[in-house]
Image (cartoon, rainbow, N blue to C red; front, top):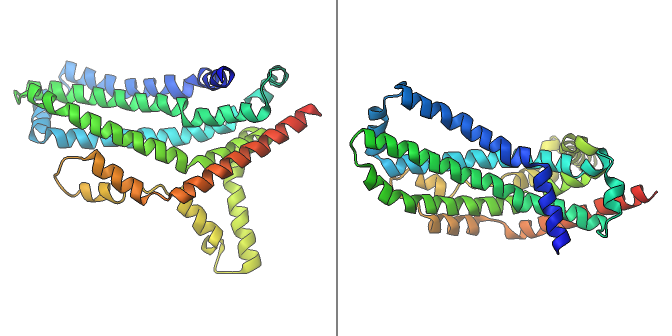
Length: 296
């Protein structure tokens, strides 16, 4: 177990640039100019303070959700590039013989990389999203204090809002990672064969399957096949529908319990289970390819 944890930790060390340093740099790029603008008077603190004071919790809720959504999109993109790079890194940097000499199977090695995509790497992005929300509140708090609108009053209410949206974001992160697990596993499995070309080839492969179905069974076009419809369904994680869609048009406070009940009820757990099975099978086949190729 210790060896497996060490392998997962190794993935963070080797890819901390994308999952730790780059997010922190992005946070600095977003907030440092804002702070300088306030300090130099480029932004009227009284005006922004009155804006926050008019509907402080609503502004903060929208801001936190916007930052959370942006970081989720960043995570999806980075994870796919990580899978294309991380699953082929051992072969590319000539470290394969070293790792082959360890008492760890190829399947366990690749499973550790897949585990990293579900745990420690997304956790770094989640922590960055929480940091962004804290900095957003700091700006709102200072601005409302400038306007004399009672920043301490807002401070007494923002803790609950922060906790609720943080929990909602965590739920979205967990379910979203499970929903897209077969896609990341497919990219990772293909990366053991073709390296960094795994991303374009992973996008091309489903299209070829849809074209093959269209040629064999007929139809209007490849995008009207069952394959294409299924892939479109699996690629669409409908987090913005349901509760969020209705909540945006009201003025009621955000409720994490209502959001969680709605998201859990709308999630196709059968598809998540099938996706997990597909991911394990794909990683196993990739490990067998890796073992046999390098043994020869």
